[in-house]
Image (cartoon, rainbow, N blue to C red):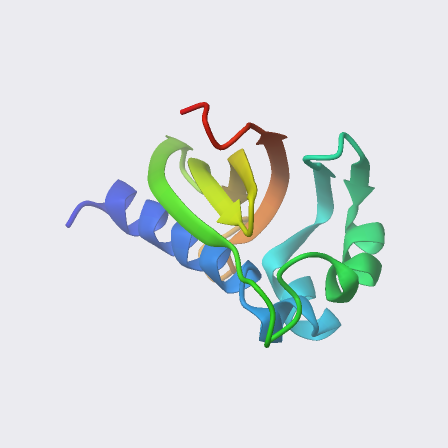
Length: 128
């Protein structure tokens, strides 16, 4: 497997970990996956910072271990530069669907992959 494919696979693994209720409810675990300069534009249109997201994540959709989880599909990834991966995919959560885009970066050979930017755009179930 190529180096680019390895980096894309690692970014997807991080994305999937962020959908895990056990990670969403743990500030320490989520904090390891989010870049300190993290920004998100959520499906609601709200802009989130690193601190805002860590504080709110345990209460957001997908955090309840017994509730509905995000169901991701159609992942694609592109290595934009060494240590910078762009992912796109779709999620379903109950009746809600969203197209998602995120940037993952790794700032050094021993640094972890962290989500630097995320954006979600809702779309109706009948629209594909």
